[in-house]
Length: 200
Ligand SMILES: Cc1cc2nc3c(=O)[nH]c(=O)nc-3n(C[C@H](O)[C@H](O)[C@H](O)COP(=O)(O)O)c2cc1C
Image (tube, rainbow, N blue to C red; front, side):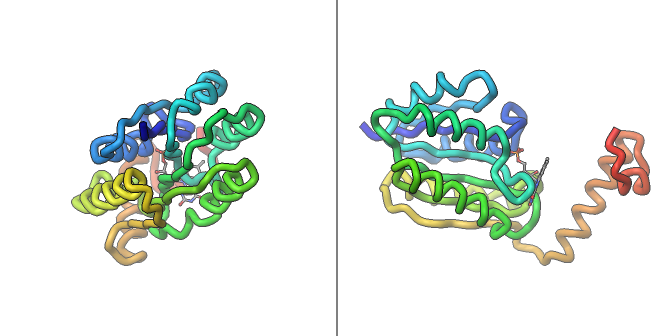
């Protein structure tokens, strides 16, 4: 039977945007899904589970133009503990900047992992403005693309998809700046303090 294991590799998985993206995927998936957050302690538990699934979807954010360390460490464990039956691996990645192409290097890393470890690579969805889009009227853009991703995975018609907010870079920068200034103000920080490298 076809089924999907969804692994959230965000370092803040329980409160992450990736969690919301995974939930939208689950809503649209025609195949049964099981969802897990990756953490430092459950690598082996997840490696042992993977063999029960025909497909695997990694959901994670872009960190410093690459994959987050939570995912890197998990991939190291998976490399040393491969499942008997290897699932097809698909990827749903989101980044803070508006351009979905920011995610390209991380996607390449995942493709190389699959090639070197004998997994078939499935579909990709690259989300730009991933921190912001869920709270805007453009949320349905991303939901629609996640539905397409879910359809492509269930029909095994693998493809590469991308989505972002349909606004100019200038408007995005302006909106993000005022969002972060307000965020700082709510936490008792001025714009000038927000612009320093001191984070505590
Ligand atoms: C340490 C750190 C590094 C990040 N690096 C990038 C980056 O290189 N490019 C980018 O577009 N967004 C970057 N982001 C933004 C995240 O990708 C974005 O906030 C995402 O929505 C987080 O997803 P999550 O809630 O699932 O963890 C970074 C965020 C953090 C905290």
